[in-house]
Amino acid sequence: MKVPFAMPIINDGMIETATNALRNERLLLGESVFKFEEGFAKMCGTGHAISLNSGTTAIQLVLLAMGIKGGDKIVTQSASFVATSNAFVPFGGVPVFNEILEKEYTLDPAKLRLDQKTKAIIPVHLYGHPSRMDEINDAARKAGNVLVIEDACQAHGASYKGKRAGNLAHAGCFSFYSTKNMTVGGDGGMVTTNDPKLAELIKKLRNCGRNIKDGREDHDVIGYTARLNTVNAAIGLEQLKLLDGWNEKRRAAAKKYHSQLSGVGDLRLPPQPSRDFSPVYHIYAVMTSRRDELKKFLDSKGVGTGVHYWKPIHLQPIYKQMYGFKEGMLPITEKAFVEELSLPMFADITDDQIKHVCDSIKEFYDSQG
Image (cartoon, rainbow, N blue to C red):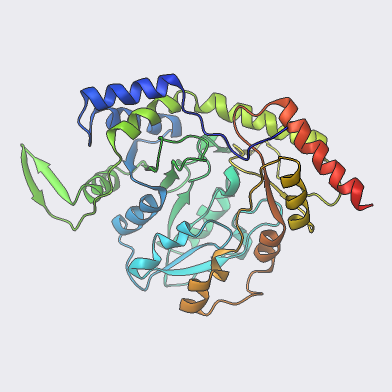
């Protein structure tokens, strides 16, 4: 049996709605764009959602719209994809990487390093598991005028204490990259916020700085070309209708993994849902000191796996070169990145596929004695 690592869904309904958008709407900022934004804001429980061309752009434009400038410190975690900090390093934002919680892989609120130059905190809901937002928001308030922006690029539909990701801070940022819990048939991103002024400014920033009134066009800010195509928004709107069901399937799959893999070898499994946390398992990440051996064995069994990620951000060559970061700075983060292995996870994964993955893992550990 072959089990793919991920399997994005593009069904006939999505193809039909994309074709309809191509035939009947403006290619840019068509009706589907605004319907998608309205639906996504409703899903998150926010007053506004602004679609963009990527999750990286979403983080970047939020920071710029909030007045972050070169030399300002942005606290985040090195345990993330490099795009989290790539969003602000190009305009001079200074990354301050903090340690993560050993069992949750999100920012450890007790170890936040904030000072007078800290202007923003970007907690990452890594693998679809929400960060401890109450504690992070409290730390930001105590530090003064520190903004909090959720990197929710892996957490569409996740919730923390009954509130959806994207509605837990000043703003939330999402990605629709092709392996995410929902996609738009290509790259795409979204900003969510309850701040109407922030929403209006990001709308201008994504559209070359245009300020349109009474049919006339002015440019009162320096903007970017960062719109989401109408056809992608149409696909996203169709997928949004299915998101909650897809997430429930992922949670069910995670529960089956947990049941079959508990106590196997030296595996450490991802956190389960709890009263406060409702993750969406964008990634089902296990930890093992034998990661590379297990990955090679699973490859031989037709089981697709991934590593998220091969290096934490602070140990990427360009970050070491620019900032002098070194091994040993963040021991919990660095250990997790040596041990993490992502197992197959997608909405339509079958019980037989999960069993094959789990049986193969058990076979690996049995063969090791």
